[in-house]
Length: 285
Image (cartoon, rainbow, N blue to C red; front, side, top):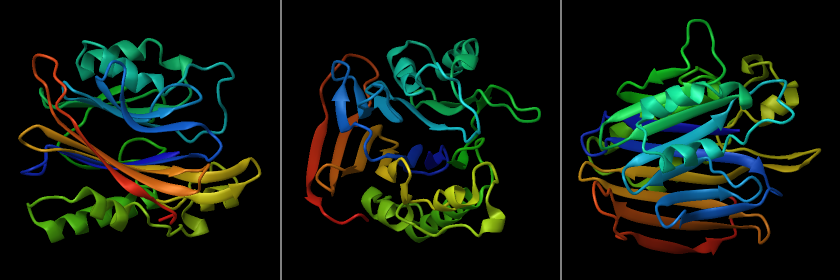
């Protein structure tokens, strides 16, 4: 389970700005933010299945996903975490990749996938769990959007809370710089939970209650589960990319921070990134 809020082509300084919490069992192996695949793809890595929940490429392509909350799952499904990587490695634009993915969408458990190309100003939302007259591939319009474990912009209380808080906070910065770390601390560490009457009603009440906060931390029968990392991915109008990640090291019980910056490469390959690491913190939030 994850939750993300993002600006798309609606801010004078940032054509794209993303906040994302990744929720997972603390025992699941995870590698923190780093360059991989020949130093061309930047993101965290699922150490078990080898995929990712959020990554970007030097050419200005970005992909991230959340799971769809559902009662049943495919016993031998393909790994959803491969989808962002496949897009970033491909030569296809977001629409082309999304339409190609539709052909095999039934091989995966429920997913919500956002694919973006900063250079062409194109973003699509892809899902394999349709509702009403929804399409598999939808162009994402400029604006502020929230994605949780239902369709894009579904008004679940936690999604509304994050979207409203983001809009309110943006007003305090006017049209100026958006400090990623500060925004993460103000918005993505929120532990307020929903009233039982507002829960979606797909899972048992107690389970949904503990998942109803933006920042999740719960001890379940299968072990400790919750927000393992928070990311802020910002792209400025000058095509400078800043990727900040605050990740929890469950082995050492500490939070680590890392920021990687680079400029989008429209042509030749280059290594123009800068990495900033911060000393670990023992605090959970």
